[in-house]
Amino acid sequence: MSNLFPRSSGILLHPTSLPGKYGIGDLGDNVYRFIDWLAEHGQSIWQILPLGPTSYGDSPYQTLSAFAGNPNLIALDKFVHEYEWLDEADLDDVPDFPTDSVDYGWIIPYHDEKLSLAYEGYKKRATKEQQNGFKSFVEDNKDWLEDYALFAALKRHYGGKPWVEWDDADLVRYDEKALEKARKEHAEAIEEQRFRQWVFYRQWYWVKYYASQKGIRIFGDIPIFVAHDSSDVWGNQDLFYLEEDGQPTVIAGVPPDYFSPTGQRWGNPLYRWDVMKKNKYAWWIERFKAAFSLVDYVRIDHFRGFEAYWEIQASEETAINGEWIPGPGHDFFQVVKDALGELPIIAEDLGVVTEGVEALRDDFNLPGMKVLQFAWSDPTNPYLPHNYVENCVVYTGTHDNNTTIGWFLDDAEDDAKDFMKTYLERDIHEINWRLMQVAMMSSAHTAIFPMQDILNLGSEARMNTPGKQGGNWSWRFTEDAFEHEGKNRLGHLSWLYRRRPEQQAKVYGDAAVK
Image (cartoon, rainbow, N blue to C red; front, top):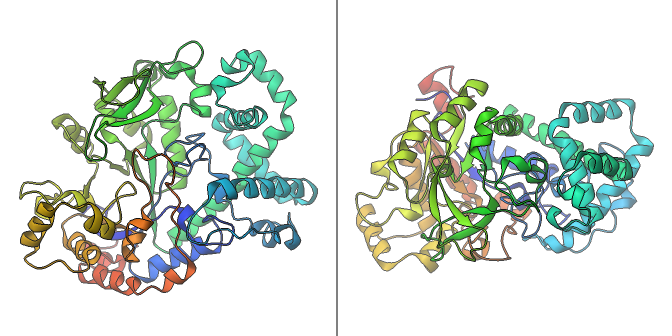
């Protein structure tokens, strides 16, 4: 048993899905309550989605920065009760936000207003210790923070337009003279963006510390590609395939598959891997360092793109017409390993996996993923438990899947249901709990379940439908769900199949994660 991945189980839940009165889950009291809930019921993993600042479409996989945090996750209550930059009256005007979903169009302006008010309060009331903390954060993170703060300030100045549509062509080109002028003209707005990132990181570091004290390891998530409308692309245009005006020439996606008959046209600009290789993948090294400062493990979304990626001409309307282009492969991961040491990385290797992808994953001893919703075809299916190697992470479903109940009732084919009945040698009752049991008893060292499956929820609680425009990323649970009976069943299964942390300490010795 690997010391890096002891036998364990946990929950997939993005912080936006936590309960709370400000319209979106945040880093306040309920995140600590959730960590306590995990620990009390034998769990040791909390998996999240990317934490970056979202933009149009609200997807955490299309963020304005690969390094910055999402200011909408900042706990507003702390501005009153902990930092003392706001008065209670400043938060008396909370709208009647939905309690079981996130209405981004409603919550974003409200949070933006309160964050700006808190910044004004900080300038008037900050202690010397707080001021020094802010200054240190800015200095320690200047390599990414200065670009992002300027980018965010300019984006606001230009009414939210993508950077390629800004009125100043010199700014679009990232011309140094234009940048210097903008830094002076927008100095206050830039400082406020720095402030928001400092507060986010400050709050998240306390969450991570608390989780570690409770024996909870956090699985983060790195999308292989970054959004075109991001400070990453704007500030590093030489690292991407772009036209002179900043528009991408070729973009990322995947060919037609289980999720979409026309494939997925993601629209992300593609990396110039040859350029990145010349500087020893420096941008990626910094990206990993930033991620590992926030989480204990990182899941790389679309891992196969490092072996080969689907290149689509930007002029194409779908992902049907494209071609596979070799990725950076072994060279990339060797350089990263040489720079950072052993890699606590999980490879998202779903879909069609080639021998090259398997070799890249296995040569660096990275666990892959198994999703039980994909398993029910025939005995050779790699997602069936008898075909697992120990070094993998098993899920009932991911953020891109329906809930297990929703899948079984609305999506699963009759043939799949018949095979499942044969495989399990019984009629299927409580499909979510049956599949969680199958995952728990498997040889996979890690088993992870969406919170929706613990709460017996159907399609109405789906987090994301790939290819669907709008209506995604909005599910939340309410505070009463902390007392849902599923917690006891989860704890029992963890004990029965020896996935509780204290059981690992007994079986594998002191090296196990406590």
